[in-house]
Image (cartoon, one colour):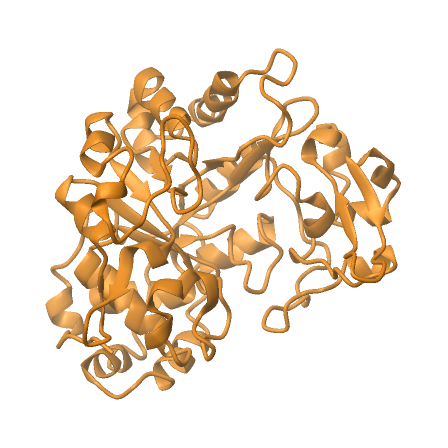
Length: 412
């Protein structure tokens, strides 16, 4: 495993424009036990020594630590409670994934069509409004349902109770289907969790002393939806920050749709300057974007330089696209990461701690370095390569305290 002789003192100079440590108006609750646990699982070496030497440090909010849907390792995602927890763990930037209701109100959900796994809708009278009703498992056919925010008005959406994002595909009843939480997550904090509109998230994040990274989610309904066009959708997202008096310098708009990013650059340049192109070209292909191999820059469509020439300043791929293994089996930056930096693009990575325990190689998020992953201690080994060698500006995390600890220790 690759390590460098780093100390917290030497790393204090390695700050970046985005990775700014700043005071918080919201309370900082501390790191909790997880960073120390991960450090205890690391192989002996300079990185472990450097991180262990920071035990007892005072927590400080840092923009390097980004709450991914809040803190969904333990709290229902995109809830008030999840984001309060993330801010308390020092996340300097918080995320609202933005979609819309039947009356085109903007709300925080990871997808327009996830209500059947993230709320109790199937156990309410609103289940009859779902795009696809609950169908129980039958032999080899899994249980299924599809419920969209666009199936409901805002008033109806606000009556739902959020829960951990999960479903039991073997279920024959609604009650069983609403379970299925992974055994490394928890339902302990589900009770009385509160959903949010996008406007409510802006007010909450500001009150917590955090900055903003909303993601404009793809619609599950055809666009335009009535007279609501994709451009209207992208503009309405910005308008809610303008109405709240938020400084554009505190906002990193996100979208997997490159056209959204180009819209913001052209039509809302103050916000477009920090718009983040979420890169899903590992699987997606259309007229403007081709599926790519992160190890082969010849496959990049558009190229990193072409993105920069469009005015894109931030790119955010899944973390596995940014790293690979060299001939000695050490974790190193990928050609994708090198090309992005050479083009002057700022890089944000996602998503840390989304994979759960790493003993079996880390799953999808660590697929490019699975042969070097053997324990939870490797979370910090990977983060160190991403921060120090790739030079990422920030990391989305399902439990921000672990990223905050590293960033505070290394001066990020």
